[in-house]
Every structure is written in structure tokens, then in C-alpha cells.
Length: 276
Ligand code: DGL
Image 1 (spheres, helix red, strand yellow):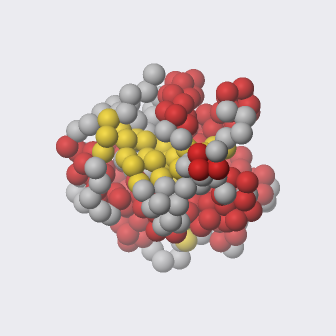
Image 2 (cartoon, helix red, strand yellow; image 1 turned 45 degrees about the horizontal axis):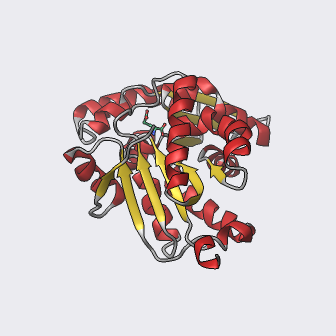
Image 3 (cartoon, helix red, strand yellow; image 1 turned 135 degrees about the horizontal axis):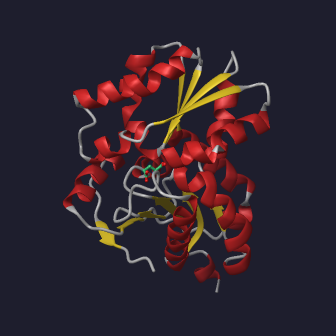
């Protein structure tokens, strides 16, 4: 009985392989734990889909990861965190998984952004779905209603990264186009509100300069989870600590192996996941 109770892993869910960047950081900060990663590569992007469809896909991902013995799940995907997350927490978990937990990336990220901004002007770049949900603005203003938030949807960035063209001239042109309106608002803090944007950090820095603080989610989410586990011993005590990391994706292509390895920082072996 005790043995079973301690066999639980931490699930990490993303619409694709961008969340591997967050997984990499989680493994670095919490190396003893077991992680199960799921990337819904067959249905990426989520960022251009309706909230209803993202919720449906997300419920399936949650079912999959809990069936893989996860005790809690981190939504690395901002699009899933921005709207589906609260429906999962309020409606789905109480009904089907009352003892399990699901956490997103938006709240930990805005907590740090709020603590960093001095002039109270924060910019956000994210997918269309995340921007339309208003989740970043809502959560920032909950902490401090004095802050001004400007969001810019960047619909083309994910596809350019997915095509492996993140170092191209096209990327530079797109970044300048998306960042210019935010720089014009004199923001002093910029949230990279999408799993994929972490790998663009240096390029973004070159464009916006040193005066604007960049909030990139990977490190934040990992240290906040560490903190969370310290405060929630009832969950922590159930987690197995064998340093086993397992990777699933809904479509197995060479690209996932290749770009997945790039995002995770070392070679990964991916198994096919079937979501129903
Ligand atoms: N994972 C998504 C996010 O963080 C980006 C990719 C997508 O559109 O599915 O918002």
C-alpha cells in the first residue's frame, strides 16, 4: 500500500515540445523526482483554437497523465493555462479526480513580473488564444490594479520555431514587428507568455535592450513548484524519487526527437501517446 502511494510522478503537459524547456528546468531544480511529459504534437498549435476546443484537448491530456500515475500536473502550455486550467480545477477535477492537483504557469509568472516592474508597465507576448483570454492582464491586475498591461499576440512565432527557423532573418523581422508597439509604451518588464519563446530570449534581449526586464517562465515555474512541494507535504510524500523522466507525444516524427532534444538540452526518447 505504502509502496503504491509513493509511486507517483509529476506530469508536465504542453501542446507540443516547447514545454520541454520548462521540463528541463523542472528536472534541474527537482532532480530526484520522476516526471512524465506529454506534448500534443499531433494537434499543435493550441494558440489559434477556440477555448472550448482547448478545454476538450486539455481534459484528454489530463486523463492521460493521471492514467500514467501522475499525482499533479503542471500545464507548461500558456494557452491551456489561460482558460482551460480554471475549468479543469473548478469542474473537471472535483468530479473525476478530487484528490489530484493541476497547476498552470500564468500565476507564478505574473507574481514575478509584478515584483520586478518599477514603472508599473508590463508587456506580454503570447499566442492569440492566451491574449484573447485576458488571463495575464487579469492576474497581474489582481495583484496590483495600478499596473498597466499591454499584450501583443504573436501568431507567427510558434510556426517559425516549429519549422526550425528560429535563427532566420524572418524571425528577426517578426520579433521587431511584435515588440515595437510594446517598447513604444515604455514597458520596463516583458513577459514571454508562451512555451516556445524561452529559446528566443537572447534575440529578444538584443532588440529590447538591457533596460527592459525579461520574464521567462522556465526557471520561475521550477522554483515555484519546489516551493509548492515544500508547503504541500501531503502531495510531496506521494511522489517517487527515482529520477525517471518519460516523454510522450501524440505524433511521433523525427522533428519531435530533433527539436525536442534541442528544447530539453539533451537527447530524449519519445513514446507515442494516444489520447481519447
Ligand atoms: N504551448 C503554447 C503556449 O504556451 C504555444 C504553442 C501553441 O500554440 O500550441 O501557449
